[in-house]
Length: 293
Image (cartoon, rainbow, N blue to C red):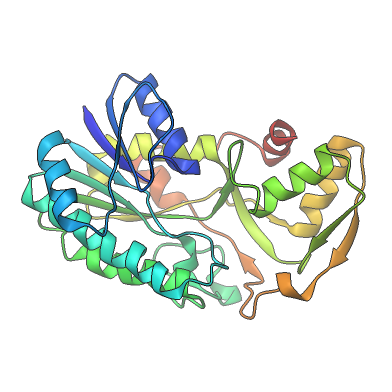
């Protein structure tokens, strides 16, 4: 079927477009900036431009939209940008989907909407309290609230991905930064709190979740976690990279890398996603780190 993927030039968008193309779907990639050459059609439209967006959706008449585009780097200092890109732009896209009869829409939110969880809430299910502690998480939660007002207009699924990584992720994210330092045999690395723990999934498994959800009628109206249930501290990731590479790094703790509201542990439960469409993680974290090295 014809599928429009926003954020197509990003880490997840590139991988999802490639996977859908390989499945034989008609893929239309949409990104803010001109996209690299690819065997699917690509369009450059600013989602904040409502008129241009309506024109494109009317032209393409997609049978599904996967909305991945977002301002996603948590430490970004452009506060207004979070709300313009994550809330206003999403509203424009959903308006266009409703106006032009798109039957299926998947909107990517984030596990950051959970904020700082209580120990009793871990691992986090979709019904856990939502208490975001930064503008990224707050903008994603506002986006979720707006998106749900379109529940009667098309089959809507909201996803809450936890941390994920893999080949092609930007170097300023944590795991690619570690992989680069170890593969280049650097002497030292500057990091923040080594004891924060995160639930990590591979990009390949995340993409498979989206491809399954596109064909999962039971997911309409649902909000689902995408996570692995496997939690690693930064200290444990360093140990794994050391073991896999045979190289050790001197770690320098830098206060600027410690966030004011750092979340100590963020782990998720993917039982609902498994129940709805049979998804479960397949790639181990050591294998993932090895591929990145």
